Image (cartoon, rainbow, N blue to C red):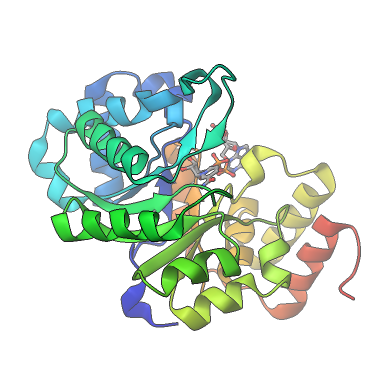
Length: 289
Ligand SMILES: NC(=O)c1ccc[n+]([C@@H]2O[C@H](COP(=O)([O-])OP(=O)(O)OC[C@H]3O[C@@H](n4cnc5c(N)ncnc54)[C@H](OP(=O)(O)O)[C@@H]3O)[C@@H](O)[C@H]2O)c1
């Protein structure tokens, strides 16, 4: 992989989707303390989206940042847009849908900047591939965002190779944020990661712990491997991801400091190939073909 195109340069990203699940971070000064602690430990990249908490997650983060504006310069803020949740749909159908039109993306970016209280997003991603995307229009507005300086770099999320390749012909895409974990292994087997690596796009892995839904058999296998390596099960689950082509960067969803610290401490853990396949097999329930 062309390392210079890795846009985040952190061992893990912090996902903001569940920000409101942590009452201890409900006060802006408490969240500010959390952000500062992350930065002190080299974790300066935060993954947002305009739909998280229907905008409330960005707004809360922005309230914390307003208490110490100079901190902004030390952060990498990633935003995403193009999903319209059903309650936000103004049509008679009130339907969840995607909107990659120039007007919608422009408006979404401005709203995110306002909520976060910043002048630019470091990274801006199309959240989901829109089956109705008019590529020329979407490409133009994304170029305009880069040129205006309101966005530092561009990426996509949940795009398959044929989908992101269409945009990558015209835009300097830097990443694809995809679901990737022991419970979501498709991209590890179907060539998606190789395609990203060959084109110099960094894979970012969302829900690396499957949102806490690892089945008991997998938890037991992770614990056994962890014992043999002197590591913890969470560290092994992340090492399984990092072993993949292009070393996908996990986006951690838990904002409990103990989990984050533990994940960080295991960032150099390496799995050999038989251990990787053993865990893949336990998780999938069948052996490699
Ligand atoms: N691009 C997309 O379409 C997309 C989709 C979904 C998510 N994302 C991004 O990815 C981020 C992470 O997603 P996620 O929250 O589903 O990720 P995750 O890290 O897989 O899940 C975190 C959740 O799992 C729980 N959990 C239970 N056992 C755990 C364990 N042993 N280790 C760690 N966590 C455990 C955590 O609970 P505790 O609170 O007890 O720690 C927390 O509720 C989001 O915040 C968002 O930024 C992107």
